[in-house]
Length: 367
Image (cartoon, rainbow, N blue to C red; front, side):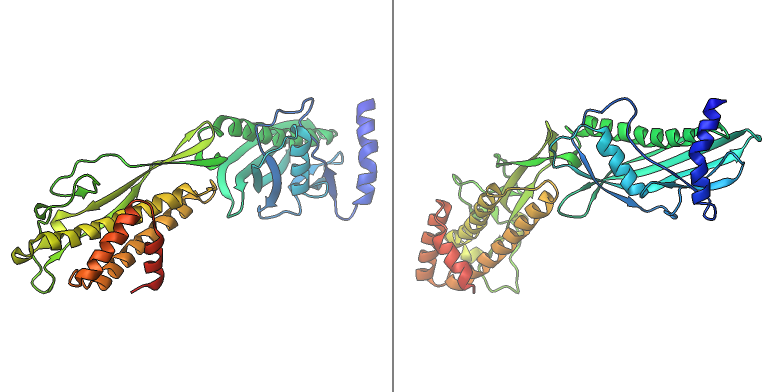
C-alpha cells in the first residue's frame, strides 16, 4: 500500500501541471546496472522521422484516463544521452546517425486495475562522414507488457529497456562486422600489379621484351581509310576489394593491350618503318598506363569515396591516352614526317624509362 501511495504522490503534481494537456513525461537514462564496452562508435546524431514526434503514444493513469507520453526534452536528446551514459567513451572516428522510424507505445485496459501495452521500436543506423550517410543496419523490435494501472513508473522501465536492447544490438553488430564489412573500413590499401598474360589472336598484351609483328594485324583493311595501317590499343583496370583486419584491400591489375581483330595493314604498307609507327601507338598506351600507376600509388584514399577517386583517375587516364594518340599522329602526320617520327621515338623511349617531361609538354600543347 505504501508503494501505491508513493506513486500517486509522484504523479500528483504532474496531473495538476498538465491538467489541460493531459501529458506525462518520462526520461531515458542508461542501461541499468552496467556500462557497456564500446565496440568503436560514437552516436553523433538522432533524427526523428516518424510521422508524429510530439508524442510517442498514450498510457493509462491511476484514474483510468489516457495520457499522452513524451520523452524529457525530446526523443533525439533522450536517445543520445542514453547511449552516451551507457557506453564507455573512447576515441573513435566512426560517427553514427540514428533515424527513428518508430518509437511508439500504446496501451489497452484489461480491467479497472490492469493495463497491457506494447512498445514498438525501429531504428535505422547510418555511418556519417564527409559525404551522404551510409546505411548500415536496422533494428526493429517490440516489447509487450502488463502492469498495474497505478504503476506508471513501470512504463519508464519499459522505455529504457527498449532503448537498452537497441544499444546492445548495435554495439554487438559493430563488433561482429568491423573486420569484414566494407562499410566499416577505416582505411584503404591499394595493391597495384601487372601479371604476365599470354597473348592470342583475340588480345595481344604489352610486353616490353616482345615487339609487335604484322601477324598481329588480322582485320581486313578499311577501304575508306587512306592510311596504310591502323592499330587498336587500350588499357584496362580490374580489381575486387576485400576486407583484412578492418582494412579494405584493393588489388588493382593494370592491363595494356591491342586487339588484332580490330587492327589492320595493307599489303603494300608492310615495312619496318610503318610497323615502328604502329608499335609507338602501343607504347603511348603503355606510357599512359605507367602514368596511371604512378597516380594511383600517390593516392591517400578515403574508404567513403575510394571507388569514385579510382574510377575518376582511370577515366582521366583513358581520355589522356586518346588525346596523346591524336597528338602523336598529328605531330608525325601518321608517320609521314620522318623527322617528327624520330623525335617521338626518342620522347616515348624516355617516357618508358620514367622521364615524362616531354610527354607533359606535348599534352599541354595539345594538337
